[in-house]
Length: 112
Length: 113
Image (cartoon, rainbow over all chains, first blue to last red; front, side):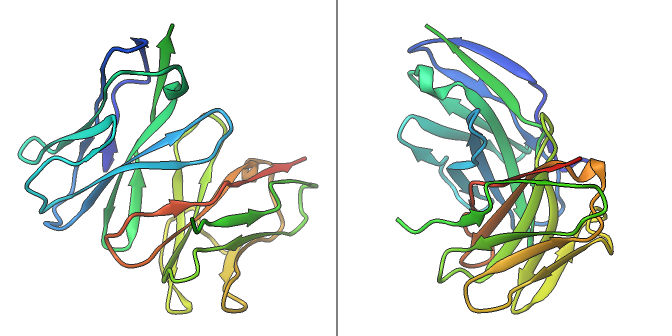
């Protein structure tokens, strides 16, 4: 069963606009963590933001925020004030126990 | 800032050869991981390692693969008798404790000819 689902293979956003990248997850474990990673064309995986399943507030890190809706099992990434350097693949991931599961990724292109 | 390092950055090998991919996790981290990413596809979990033994492995991680922590700093992935379909980016990652943020190395791009 697919643990992490990213339904948007590609997204476009105008520079300086906000964009939401969708992620839904599936687990019966009450304790889990949700992550977003950015993978630019150079290939490295860059950690962006983390949300724990027991966290009451949505995580924020600078221009990144995670819209965590536990009942809907969604963990969407919101990028505010998009910059050209935000163009990359974005992966949603979940860890339960000692294993991490990754989504198929969303390719974001920021248009000048 | 501490980081995970991987060597080599690129490796080209002939089908049937053995390769060893090396990783140096962040020094105080306790859990180590290997992933692979076939070009244009998602990141796939291979194996996790804790307390000098494999704690979990995926169905991809068959007898062709092995991991080792030969000393206090290195964490290696060995692929025996490589196949064309082993061509991928291989990422090492580490975390301090369960549930913590996972930090990735820059990856080793493996090409099997």
